[in-house]
Amino acid sequence: MACILTRHVIRQRVPVPANTQQLRTMELEALRSIYEGDECFKEVSPVSFQFRIGEHDDSKAFILDISWPEMYPEMAPEISLDGFFNKKISSETKQLIISGLEEQVEANLGTAMMYTLFEWAKDNQEALMENHQAVVTAVTLTSNSDLNAPAKKKEKKEQLTKSQKRKITCRTDNKGELPRGWDWVDVIKLSRTGGKEED
Image (cartoon, rainbow, N blue to C red):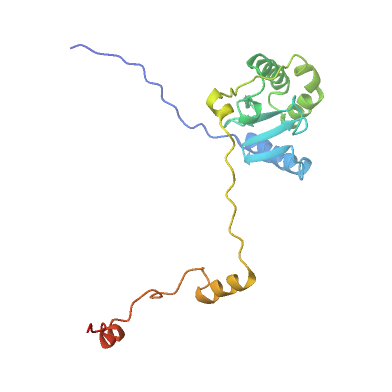
């Protein structure tokens, strides 16, 4: 009898220690009170946050996406710069920012660190983005026929007088449509009059 051994990874939900859950709750309340009304901070969910470093129209601004794993703050949070806002940042610059934040995470592991990470990124924005050159992602294609084509003339709208407008509105309902049967022919009236007899 042959026995085939396979390797299975079984993941069990490890209950989050009460102390860890309490730390997370306290940090969440602190973040909400510190950044209340701050347009740079956004709570995506109770375990996922976005923080914009720099002004919205600044070419060196970027958004940090940070998510808490189940065992945070005992485990490092997940840091990402993959958002659409960060498309203009080169991958080398993104890696530099993430490696700097990971150093801060290692130094603060086991404690509430979100405020520390956000403030470190704000304080070091210039150093992190000093070699930043915007990545061009859009290419515009034009053909010669489009450039040489004459501009289309706008068709002039017919100008109506007040009396013409009044006449139209009297004939139509509130939607601007003529009433049902406006062009119907009265068959009975036509049958009575008949055609003219030819002599």
